[in-house]
Amino acid sequence: MTTNIENNENTIEKIALSYNIDLKNLNLKTVDEVRNIFVKAEINELPLLLDIYIKDVRSSVQLIYKQYFKKLNNYHDELIRIEKMKYFEKKYCDYKYICGIDEVGRGPLAGPVVAAAVILPKDCNILYINDSKKLSAKKREELYDQIIEKAVSFAVAIISPKRIDEINILQATYEAMRDAVNKLTVTPDILLNDAVIIKDINIKQVGIIKGDEKSISIAAASILAKVTRDRIMLAYDNVFPGYNFASNKGYGSNEHLEGIKKIGPSLIHRKTFITKYL
Image 1: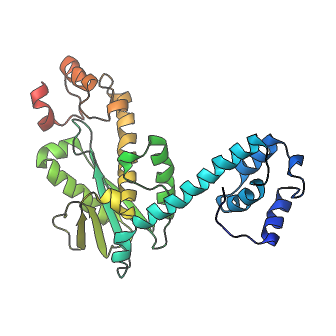
Image 2: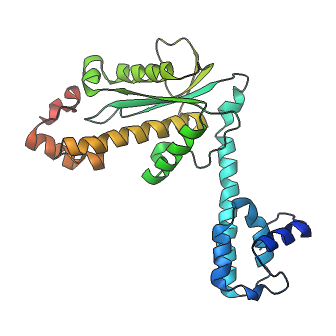
Image 3: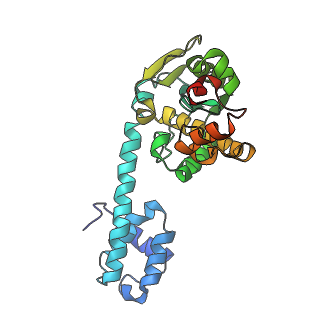
């Protein structure tokens, strides 16, 4: 097994010195010490450390080697995946500010619909960004912080259940998207949208089917919208107990439907969505 990365001896000697590794006698480090070296190492140090410890014949060390060899390969695979997710950003690279837009919350029986607009830097390389539905809650929270830290501009818009009932969910979704764009601190030159074309907005738009899987900008927007809405529904769970909003986020789970039948609708239920359950 090899890392397939060329390293000169001076670079290997440098990293060996920084981790106090004796290249002539690797056994001087215990297995736990070797493991700690890999745990502390930056991703760009792994190829060098792997080139060193491929020569350590201890079976426990070789298990560590295989673990971090796999981690490095997964990292390279992720770099390739992220580059593919920049296809539309590269296609429209002549536009200075490329804005991704997505929404969450069309289908729930309760709670708001939330849209987010995100303009990422042209050289943005936040790994593991993906369609928010494909990520764990923990990973979404981690990526949320990275996105808002690195974004050129971002904004989130929230449309209430009352407003959804007044104008219908489709129009409420358009309204949320328009509001998010209008709240940005810079004006986008082009909008990359998840599937839809937003009405009443005078900016060039590109609707991309399954855009949250194909565009890093749209995926970033989907994460901001999803995290924002989930936080709202977690807070509502404390205000309106009996529906388990913390778990179902307002979608029509069995427990949620039983809650509606037992105690009736809450102030955040969409009246136009629940008539058949009353």
